[in-house]
Image (cartoon, rainbow, N blue to C red; front, side, top):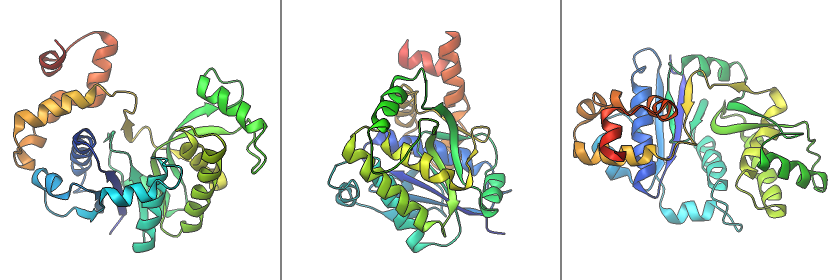
Length: 272
């Protein structure tokens, strides 16, 4: 039985492309137990196809389209909302969107089951805006006190939008996210406005965390240097070859090694 779609946006530089390769390799470990279609919106189809197995759906998306989707405000995260609106206009079913800097710890099957039952998925609850120790949240709380177009209380919780799960029939909900994001960003042009818009609009049916299923390493940019070195060393080898070698460089393990001040061999070769 078909579960749904897992959708990525991967365009621009090779750091992003390498991240999506690793994320997809983590998903494909569970392909025998979950029936899903992987979809990548990209301007680099030929490069990705060299590394990946057959069966992945590519949506050719030139940089001009991404620039158009950023809108008049040139807001990079707006493009993600527009991409998802484009996808649900073309496809029917359960949708699990993932940023490229994600790694699947478990099969996505349970997430697809929750989506089918009407739940909305976001990665994790990052906390309430009110009285937060997070400086960005404190600034948002102050801004929202004077924001008159929409009532967004300080009790609102900010959820990480690196993973999003919903049905294709939630098209109007995505329209609301876009409208709110545009309004918020026009009034206060900060990078978190898309995330705030998803947090506000997705609370219509509650939100379910997926941090136990998907590791999101948005705060671990050093991993990009590791991946760059890894793919250089593996010289466009077939998927079965390079994907079998990645156990030494998993993002959650390397980030933990940084905390514990230990360095696996691959880490040492790059950072000393």
